[in-house]
Image 1 (spheres, rainbow over the protein chains, first blue to last red):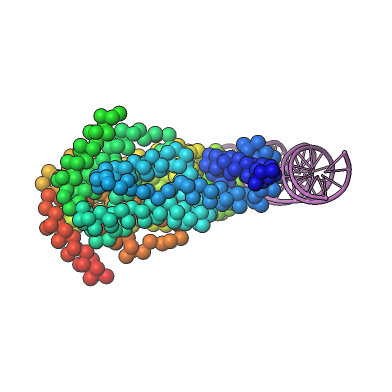
Image 2 (cartoon, protein in one colour):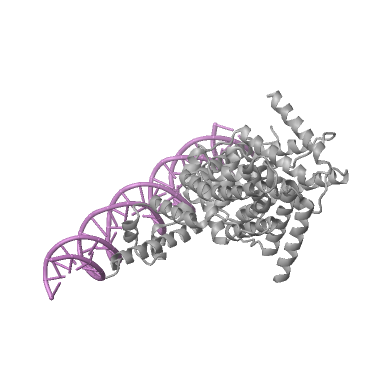
Length: 224
Length: 224
DNA sequence: CACTTTCTTTACTTGTCAGTAAAGTTTTCT
DNA sequence: AGAAAACTTTACTGACAAGTAAAGAAAGTG
């Protein structure tokens, strides 16, 4: 007597299992290398059942790519009342912890590798991933500019600079070399350096902010 | 009566044709999606001939990836006697023109997409591509620091910053969205902004260098 | 020019994979 | 409970792909 009938319940459950299996197998073997039999088996179902839920391999692939998009890159909401420097640190670590996760990197490799054959998937990812983060970052930076804490002409470029400074180096490396797990220490080195460079170029009061950053870094270091 | 016999000549010619065909087909279809028949046909040969030159699909793939590595990322040699700002511009454009070329991007997508299954290929690319460029950039930046034109503590981080500032944004976008050809204007916007930010953070005389940059930019603009 | 060696092809073998037909099972509704 | 609907499975088809055997063509050599 549920709102959701037992049928519907099973349906959703199996669909989720299929999508999870798909993400795993596709990420592991690539689109062409993945087999529908293997995906079905991974989900504990048979191939015709899979075809009952998704009409083709392509459809499954696209459905699988649509699913995680929603949740994977939530807009960052800066904690109010905190200092600029602390917020930049929070922001950097929030995205570093998402973007550098092995499963996230696998998915990124898959999207990039298949971008030729699935241009929609690549574009949708760009729209709902990087571009969404960028938009959030921009509004944050503009707010800081309004408070005369930062100075720049084009918010978009400032946001791109921030992203490029903190994460492009370790992420590109991780995309090329899958096994090299980037430790938190190495990541911290890039992030701290990136924020330092960003503040030097964009802060209205670099000396104070750099001192603030140094203090925040040693505080974080101590609490570990 | 050549040094190179006609046999050897044919051999090399066919090998090159096979490697070119392989690069084309693999980049287009991915490793699993590419077929040895298609590669052979693309080279104007038959499949057993292909197998005469390369023992397996894997071997062909790895040989194909080894070939372009050598030439694709030549170390940048800064023109002597030029100003720091001009050299940074030269450097940025030299790599932008390489890295953003459609065929180069296709290759990068392939490498990233197959990094899971071919970790050696990914690592070798990182070593002989990005890391080699980074090393060249580092020696250049250190030379500039010795002349008191730049200031930084760790050359590696400064070099990563430069790279991240000028090319990470357009390149990541291009990796995700293959068809969106990034125009020279858009590229110039990123590069000029990246160098501006870099100079603000690293120059010993930012005002002068930024003025120099503005002049160099309008000069380039005029000659077009 | 004949003969040997190397290279190249046509014609297979074996295995795998996307997708489906038809039969069997579970759930829902009366 | 029993009929009807929705779901799932076993068992298959046709196509294509990696790799090979054996015959055929092209070079180099005496």
